[in-house]
Image 1 (spheres, rainbow, N blue to C red):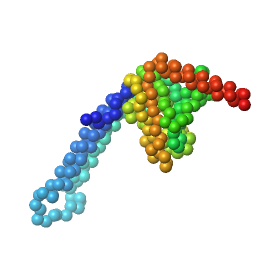
Image 2 (spheres, rainbow, N blue to C red):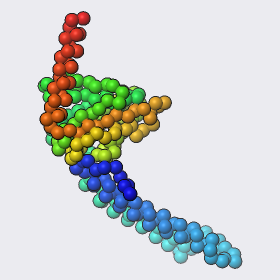
Image 3 (cartoon, one colour):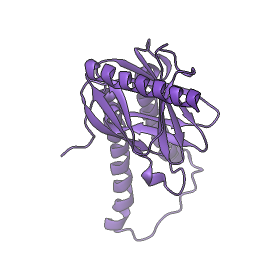
Length: 231
């Protein structure tokens, strides 16, 4: 039985390990709480005694759970720090730079033009329903994430990349795909009436195929510019 989607990025296994760690702590707390609730059900008690919490002996029922929960939180924070720092703070030197813009109800993909610089006049913009985001395998892909209208969430489950996309702000995130294939891109934030239709696809391909794809984009861009001049 599969618990997670396929793992196709260099840091996906670290996210999965954090999930297991949190699951273990939450599971232990759940079992203890369940036992504490069920004991009075099956244990015959003639008369319940009032519990005011004023006596020193009562403090342990507050202190022990608080200490245990605090320790579990500190353990989780300590273990997760390196992973989150790698994903959110230590952005690697980009090998491919792509812009992603969320709008109701589609993801817009912006590829740099021949100058290899994003957000310039020769960028190629792909804004089509259910369009594909193409990236090369085994390359560090850095994304500029933006939103045109409301709050969205850019989620690619197989890479474990999941990031809120906020109007008026650019969030920079990255991943390095390790396996070719076609995978789903979701909006994981309810963003309006047609939220469920905001579904695009990630295509991870070998470098040669990616170069062919970008060459076609540049060709389309030149044709668009030619039509604009002629008109």
